[in-house]
Amino acid sequence: MGMQRTPARARLAGLTAVAALALSACGSASSTTATDPGAGSGTPTAPVTHSPSLDVAPASGPVLSAGRFSFHAPQGWADVTDRAETGVVLSAANPTDDNPLMIIVRHRAQAPGSVTAAAKAAARLLAAAGGTDIRTRPATNVGGNRAAHVVATQTKPGSHYQLDAYYVLTGKDAWVITFATNQYTTPSHRDAMLASVLATCHWAGA
Image (cartoon, rainbow, N blue to C red; front, side, top):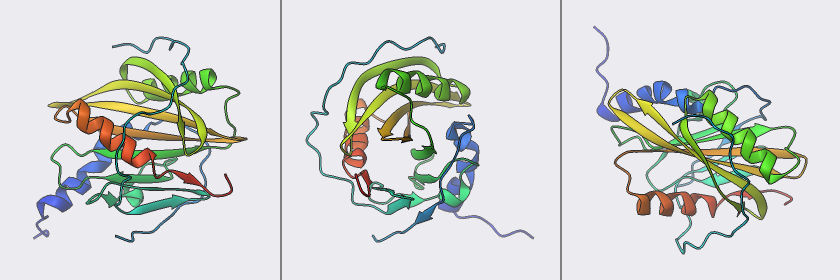
């Protein structure tokens, strides 16, 4: 007789399926370490640079790190990097949610030459993950680095997700930070959560 899973374990196991949003496009990845102290794919428009205006407290959950990059997940989230697909260097999720919220990080050894090019690369990445209604949001700054912000919708049986991809240019390389939030996430909660995590993004030596 097999062992019965607790709801939290079952949800975490189900993350592998949800991580089809783990963005199947191939790319180079860095080594990974982690610590836990606490409607179409059209060509995106050129982004306009702006700075985030949300005044939120930085996330204070588990620290995830890979290479010279690290960030805090929200309080109560779990590091699920060991369940991520090939090419994903970091992954965090809310294990108590029936339709899990997720953060997925990929590393690119070569950065696009501009934020506009990064936005186009992010759009292709979201399209490869089955994203539709792909839109380019105004460019922003993450951890002191220029970043493109592209959003898409990903439909799953019984639910749908908004995918927010931040393609961060960190010199010669780049990092793609993708958030997946479900249809039950209000826009204000989504914006606050994204801002709280992005506020903790740090690149050593930057």
